[in-house]
Image (cartoon, rainbow, N blue to C red; front, side):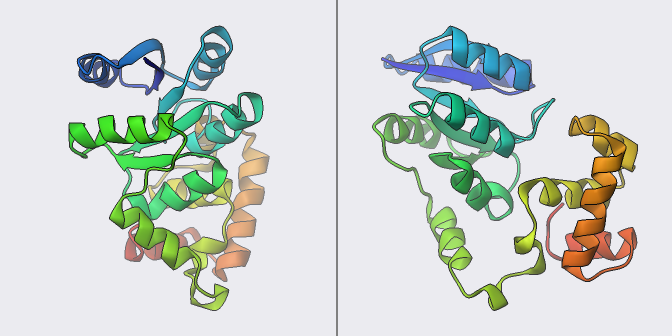
Amino acid sequence: MIKILLADDHTLLRGSLKQLLEDTQYCQVVAQAGDYFEVIAAINQHKIDVVVLDISMPGKNGVDIVKVIKSQKPEIKVLMLSMHPEDQYAVRSLKAGASGYLTKNTAPENLVDAIQVIAAGRKYITPELAESLASSLTEEIEKPLHATLSDREFETIRMIASGKKLSQIAEEMSLSPKTVSVYRARILEKMRMKSNGELTRYAIENKLI
């Protein structure tokens, strides 16, 4: 029996996923979490094989949560389940320690297959993710500008482009406004841009939002 932690801030989605997985007869949802702190509490309170984790979690970004999980419980496998297309977060998630990445509009049977593969100690790679991984191995000069950003900087540029103020970004990322300002300055320097307007235009043109 594969013991699973469902981590998503949408209660209804967790409920439907729990029903789907437990109908398979070989998956058991032993815990659920709606934010970062509940995830950490759950992995320390339960024997868990696989965490099905949303990218957009209150308290801390999903990519950062993967890093924490793998540092505290390296034996736990993580499957990212996100509304964001694979080309935005998949490679970053795998580099952080996730064993697979699926979008929320995937077929239910794909989710079940992914959990089985990951629980067996293998990576679950879709054809689209394989293409993203191949692209990430190309020469640095061929990479888009946003590929040079750290995970936190990447999340910051997406929030800026979505029209959020620095104070809002700071609250959502559990950081101080000063730290977010530092991230913004680094982003502008790395992207060779001068304003939020330029960042927003770039994010839209490159489908980051």
